[in-house]
Structure formats: structure tokens, C-alpha cells
Image (cartoon, rainbow, N blue to C red; front, side, top):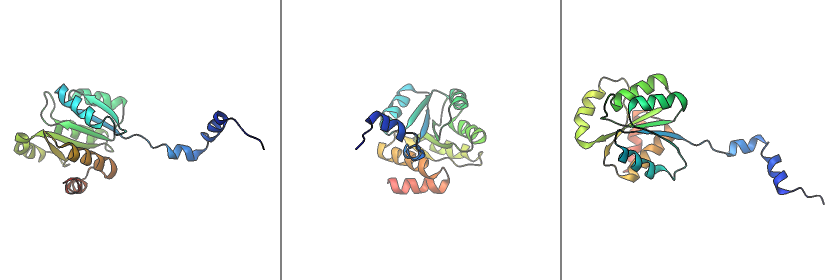
Length: 161
């Protein structure tokens, strides 16, 4: 009976296309917030979830990073200097239509956010700060799995609650 060394077996096996299918592509998420402690908190919440995480401190930095790195989801603060989260997500939607978007907003921003959202043809899901970790993770995961439509957003809320 002939035996081959294990490392040779692994090298040979890695050439088969089936192994490439077995390796799941990491989902990529960008968090955008002008407050560093919020970015740190978001990173801590998601760092062990197998995501590739990008952080940006404002809309312009996010757009610059998106030119170099495609992402599946952009989660942005609503109120930031220079460019609001809605403006950022609308620009992302135009430039990168496959990228989904979500807004993080302080509870007192809600009425203003709804008024401003009427200017944009696409409704972006949003969650209030401070967030409940279980609901935030559920919404992000559902958006990564299903899409960013209003219906899938409503489903995410219903299943997370």
C-alpha cells in the first residue's frame, strides 16, 4: 500500500475546484461614524463574526475607501459633518448599486431623518443609537443575506424583536 505525505495530499487537494467552493467568501462591512468611540464599539460587536470590517470617520473617507475596497454593506451614522449618512448612502447606491446601506441614528434624529429621507428614491433601513446588540447584529446579518429592500428590512425587524 502506497502512502503520500499529508502536506503533499493537501497541496493536491487544494487544486480541486470543490475546495474553492467550500471556502466561503467573507462578507465585507464598512462602518462610518465621526465619533471614534462608536466605531470602536461597532468593531467590538462584529469582530468575531467572520466579517471583513472597514472603518471610516466621515462620508468622504468612506467613498475614498470604497474606491479601493468593495463592500457588501455600509452602516453609517446619520449626522456627520460635511456629508450626512443619507447623502453618503445615496452616493454609494449610485456608484456601487450592489452595496447595501443602513443608517445608525440617535433617537432624537428620527423625525428629521424621516423628513430628509423623502428626498431620496431609496429607503435605507435604520436603527437607533444606543442600539441593542442582538437587534443590530440580526439586522446586519439579514441585510447581508437577503438584500436591502424595505421588505427585507421589515422582516429583519420582525425576526429580531
